[in-house]
Image (cartoon, rainbow, N blue to C red; front, side, top):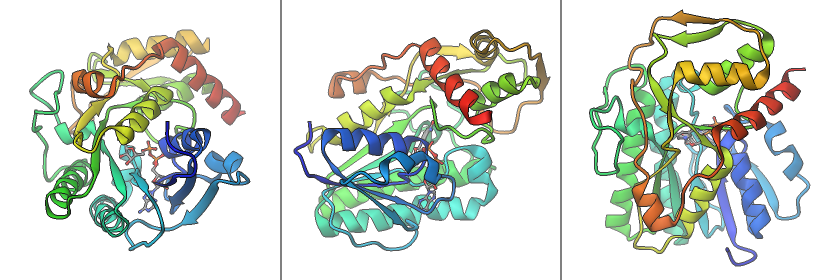
Length: 315
Ligand SMILES: NC(=O)c1ccc[n+]([C@@H]2O[C@H](COP(=O)([O-])OP(=O)(O)OC[C@H]3O[C@@H](n4cnc5c(N)ncnc54)[C@H](O)[C@@H]3O)[C@@H](O)[C@H]2O)c1
């Protein structure tokens, strides 16, 4: 557990993962500085925290330098869904790269420990399955997803160069698909897409034949992993994969969402988008060994909680 009163900065704190992280840090006794420019995040996500005596909101863009008194930094600021990060790809790269430089400079100045929310997208469309951290990936440098994939890869490079050049205390966590309450209804991610379509009684749109697989981690498990990674000893830097290794096809996911939501929607097929990875599953051996972490929330339970969130949101 963290000592009471630690000052912790969460960039992207008003987003899906960031808002859950802020809540968990407040529960542990931290002073939480939540930084966001509200590009994709919302005030509704943090509305319940605004009056908390140990919570502070800072409206700021990580692309701009920052000087605040902090001991720990979770760097989550970045649009995470393809719809959002492809909307303004130049800005996405800037947020990944310049944002990392600015937060690393702050960490260097304050001798703070800093954690980067990296992504399974650094593996691109992988030839190795499941993906261990030692795999360097197969990423298209000039495609529609490259602003995010290459931006996140460059951010990882910066983290390790700051460690080598400035002896900075870093952690790099590669997050695989995560789902849960506070995902956005129209962000094009498969879990939110299927749930929203099911609840609205619209057709469920399955790309390709639906045999491509993904694995989904419930947000509570993911936040637990981020906290453990941040608390790990200084010689543990990662990169470390966190995600749920239980793999399922998109067809199976669609069927589960239909069953759990009681929807009568039909499943229809659309062409696969370019650069869509066919297989994606984390090897979480390192997280299990070094962080003592393993996801525990069963898919049906997480899906039920997420469906309940969207049901309330969409009324
Ligand atoms: N959700 C996932 O499945 C997943 C998977 C892999 C990696 N990640 C990473 O985790 C982090 C959080 O993802 P999320 O799903 O919560 O996404 P999100 O879009 O809900 O949250 C990102 C937050 O960052 C803020 N933001 C964006 N650009 C900013 C900028 N320039 N300055 C300040 N704030 C900015 C947004 O307003 C938002 O609140 C991201 O870095 C993402 O790459 C998420």
